[in-house]
Image (cartoon, rainbow, N blue to C red; front, side, top):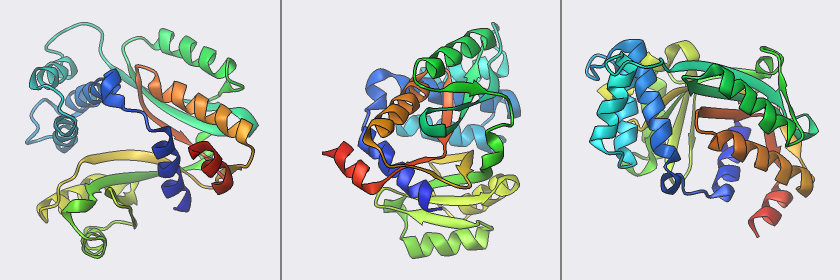
Length: 250
């Protein structure tokens, strides 16, 4: 799981303030709508929706926006339904990408992604040609300020988790994909505040980038994919070597 932590370091170097752009609200709205569509609009009976709403509140998303997203997902507002879809692709130096989208226009998204990849040294791949290089896991995030690393590790093990990664900001609890919901519910029952609960794809073997020019290219591609309006998540197998990280940070 070392790459999981290193990728967090790369994201910190990027240091974008998503809330200023409004991107974070868009992603929260998509997740709320998808959760409502999948499990209904009542957060007391839909744990995915409850977590999505809690996450939206943590970034100060207005209540009206949250309510509108719930109604959109449950079909009360009409219009085109939001759909979930995943795309796969390769970037510079053979780096692999999985992009999870939520959109009401599949044709537009497909054309836009092809353009992003082609203009940045990459290409869209056929379904399955990238994802086999990743393991599907459940990921639960808890604020580090709420509980110590030792205590959260004990609670996570008792709840059935596979691994716990901690830094100064948060604890990341990893589970088997089919045990995400039960583990999250057990942690909630023990009084822990879950700020994120979702399925993630973690690279089995990292592709280490040791050239600063290539590092800039793959980071730019990641940024463009992550900044795209309909993107929910971007997963990649690249890691940037520590000396290159230092240069990028300086």
